[in-house]
Amino acid sequence: MRVPSVIPNPGASFQGDASRSSARPAEASVQAALSGGVRDLRALFRGHYASVWRLLRRFGVPAAELDDHAQEVFWVAARRFADLQPGREAAFLYGVAVRVASNVARRGKSTPLSAQDEAFEALIDPGPSPEEALNQRQALLLLDQVLDRMPLELRTVFVLFELEGISVIDIAEIEGIPVGTASSRLRRARQEFSAISKRAQAALVTQKAPRR
Image (cartoon, rainbow, N blue to C red; front, side):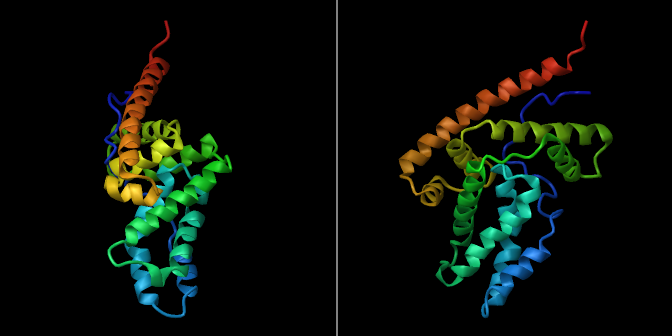
């Protein structure tokens, strides 16, 4: 069994994250909240559900709760649909997702290890060879472990910038902080990510090393 030699590229997507999630019940519920503008809401849902689901996952929302909390984000969007500015839909949804994930984190809930393992099994693309699939699974698990160990305020800016490609200016708006503060947090988040990933990789190497 080969341990991944490097931390996975933060910009790499989790293949099949949201596509394996059941979106139809949430879509129907959100659409039922509005008497008008259903087509626009449907387009909003279909255009952003995957990214919202993925963002919540990367913020540590337990796998079993992802659909419910993704639906919560779009309920908020449904209630404030008339106030959404054209071209700013993603920033609005991401801001709501950050607050939802923060509420989950404050409740102190965590996903049991067995449930995490099952979630990772579902993310593996059946296309790669068994060895490639194993390496991919290990890389995804390592990334999640590193993110889980980061302070929430640093994890937020790191995920938004490095994984979701959101600009520092937009992150500052989402978080309600000055741009300089967002830049400072991003710099600290990168340092924290690097330090934690090195410790995590070292621990994996030690764990996998043959005993004498």
